Length: 220
Ligand SMILES: O=C(O)c1ccccc1NCC(=O)[C@H](O)[C@H](O)COP(=O)(O)O
Image 1 (cartoon, rainbow, N blue to C red):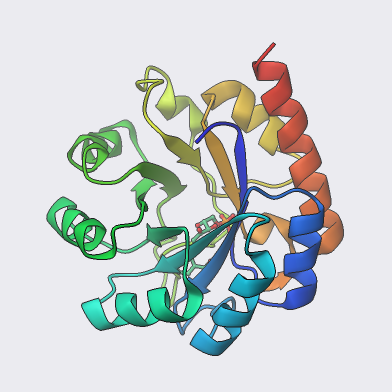
Image 2: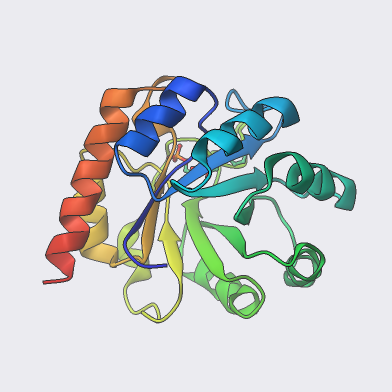
């Protein structure tokens, strides 16, 4: 996973087409009923077919049971599963063995000590997504909140780790985030929306352009 750009929370054929046409490497479909980005199995199936062969398809699940996973795999046939709940390292390993597809585990970061949670997952999941912790308020979603964490906390992190940076990224700040943290990949959801769950094609394109340029500058 190098220099990859993921657009998460796509839930219409039109905005998925915008992400694919703009060159997204990964597209994310959220399975979390309380989210404005939630896709049914049927919609996820259709979006997955649309993205097939053009981008990696990611299904995002939160503390899923075995049946939730089986249904998502059957209907959406993702290339990667993103676990965005409080799944333990043992549960991540169990899921990975069960699905025999790559897994990305999301971890919430607010302070330096939160990075200690990373090591136990590093051997269990192919990729780690670092996101801000959800705001402390009732009904906060586990992710997709448009909140950043202090990127300087990642100073000194092992560069060999397969890290996707996430949380509060948008077309205006993604270049600086890449410059400071040198992630393998970046992920965005609300930063490319015009309202909760409403992806904006122009912002998707601007985000991908800004991230691509920043990754290219980093490789020089
Ligand atoms: O996006 C959601 O609605 C969501 C719901 C439940 C768990 C996770 C969710 N999103 C996680 C993502 O992958 C987001 O892309 C990531 O948290 C960054 O979101 P944002 O800060 O809005 O860019």
